[in-house]
Image (cartoon, rainbow, N blue to C red; front, side):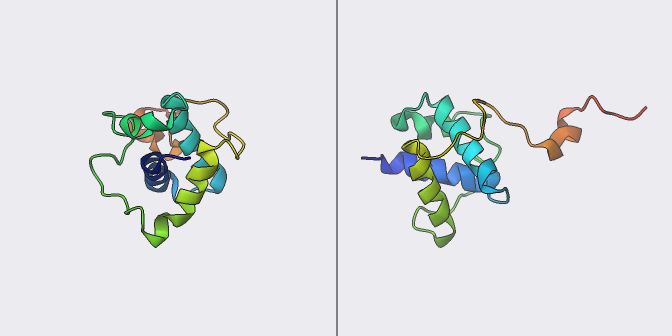
Amino acid sequence: MIETLALTCLAQTMFMEARGEPQAGQIAVGMVLYRRADFNPKRVCSEMARPMQFSWYGKLKPPERSSYELRPFILLAQKILTFKVNDTSKGANHFHEKSNQSLMGSSNQSK
């Protein structure tokens, strides 16, 4: 049986971090979180809540588990927690949004 809290935390993180991305990007975010939790559903929420792990946590309020807009992410989280998706993160345990490179420092700065 899948942990309800793990489903909710995983779905909220995918929603908040990747709702505008194709499904492959959403899966990658979910897999990164699950991998950081050592593939242990009981650790997903505590990993999500660690300081400085996800840009939205502690700043924005995610949709409730019963929210209509979260429903597709709950379904995707179920597939991730049961390993019924391909890992599009390619084994990553961190990710970086390319549009933030100017904020994070880019090696492609013009001179």
